[in-house]
Amino acid sequence: MEGRTVTWSTGTVVTVFGVFALTFMMTMYSLERRGPSFVLAFAFGCLLSGVYGFLALAWPFGVIEVIWAGVAVRRWARRFPSTDPVP
Image (cartoon, rainbow, N blue to C red; front, side, top):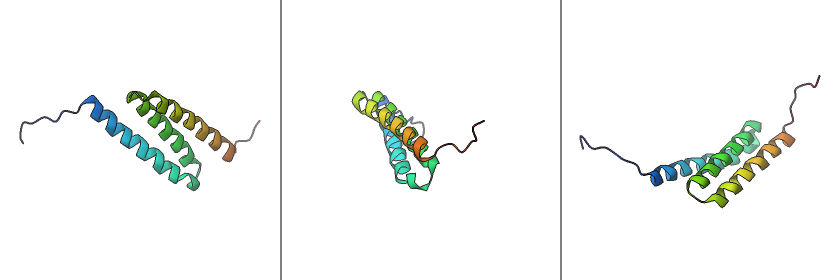
């Protein structure tokens, strides 16, 4: 197969990105009990999934994922308050 070039269509790239984003999000969700960094990583995964939703022209999915990211950040802030002393 010498000299052959592999070309990826835009749809394929978006699909691969979506598989990565959703796998990352669900993995971080399953690890949330291990610590606060996983809760924030889950929020980041939700944002990635939201980007995928918009790229795939499934904007309702994208909106819901962005909302879930906000819920996760809020949950992180309530469960793991800052330990920095307030001056």
